[in-house]
Image (cartoon, rainbow, N blue to C red; front, side):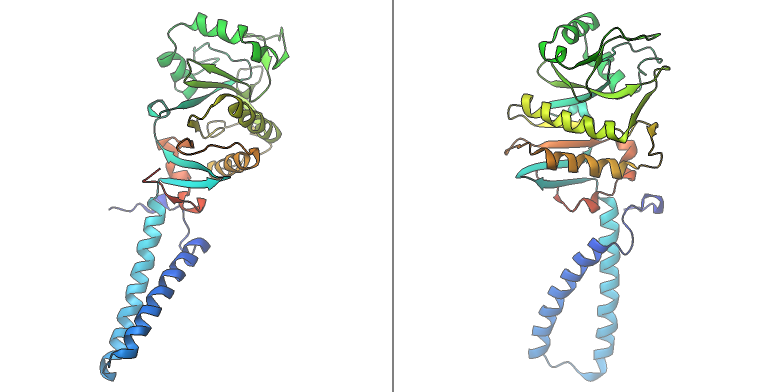
Length: 285
């Protein structure tokens, strides 16, 4: 394994890592103490054994540190539900998949309103066969009508009906289309932190209404927004922690085998300290 120093996410003397290493050392020390009681070790080799033991401890700690920085999947148990955090392609996941739209549920992919490189743009271009049909579903959905904040909004491009953040439209029984970001006069996505928290509260409430025992996969909401007004330095790690916290306080229950998966884009995995999530091994979900 080739280790890239630029990928360091877990500090060398991370408190959680030190605690875990301390538990390992304690177990080894107890075992060695029992051996020493019954073994007669010559005095002349005791120093060598001591130096060797310390060297092995140092190497062992370094191995654990390298492992902590290479983790790319973690599962956390919250309110008897399993939340998996991993990298991958959201379209390859099973169950329901959340796609973030703006507050107008725009569907115009023209590099001005919606960029084709965004998850929103890829979904519309790759998964929607009839844009007019999708627009009709959005406009005619009884539940979304109750979530209209403002109609006849003056905009140069795009739709003119603004919806409450966190509102969800279930599309094709597979996708959760949700009103996530606000749009300014230049069709640039932005959010204030209170908007983000409002979105998460409303989103989980709507998920609870819709999911019906199915697993739900969501992207790291907000990681693609460069205009987090008032919080210019917020990191993807902080957004992930807020997202997990919001699920915890939502009290939504995903009973086994259903789970929530938070998907990190592979290009952004080096921004996330998976080890710091204090979860378990993700190899068996």
